[in-house]
Image (cartoon, rainbow, N blue to C red):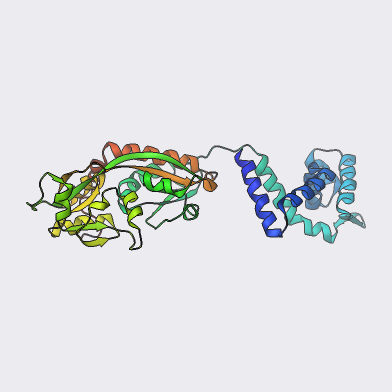
Length: 354
């Protein structure tokens, strides 16, 4: 179904609820009124109400004066009101006509938008605001690229990255995009769109001087080490944690949890703890801090990051363009994420004071 008709159907459904009636009864009544009226008379009525003159209306509409006079007679019959009455040599609006001015103007604008072919979104000249929920480390990796592209190509577009719990499709409908592991995205239901962005895997990070951590460690070796882990909220079930991070089942000796991936590196650098993080983040953290990467010998450590969105928001102006921009930024990020951040001068994590 075309987007315009989808919007009209949603509007009709909301109208039925608001009026407390049955949607089918309302549609039948509306169809009857539309058969009795001629919508092409509405622009004539709008011009008559604006000018208060048959002559001036005919001139501005490119019609003959008799044609406008005939349209006025039909409009009077339709509204059961004189609409314009002669006062001396002038025509004045009746009370009903005065009350029609605002609603008629808004209705004609909406009809025009509904019938007008949709223009392609022009990021160079249009304004838009997109809210993206994702983990803090994804914002760290992706937001600089998205911001640079917007500064160069879409100066009126704002991408707002937030790190907020999202538990249902209803929560997703309040956002424009969610960037999350595919295993989690698939739990949000079928009424969503999605797009694959990149693949990653989990590695272990440790302090550079931590001799207990070899270049490669087994799952059992990791389980025996003191750990620090990521946990956005304390109420996240273990099943959901496994979807968000496939190796979370190995975190059996956690001494500390934090709601920010970026804090993990600071803790690991200063303690004997180890942590499991996405490889792309680890490659950035080792440039900022005295850390090292240990490969984790564990089969279920790979995951995919997808962008997803509620189908209710897919018709938002510029949404398809934003989808393409996120894909483009993801490709650029996966080619050389650490090098790009380093080139931007990011040597120390935010708030580290180093």
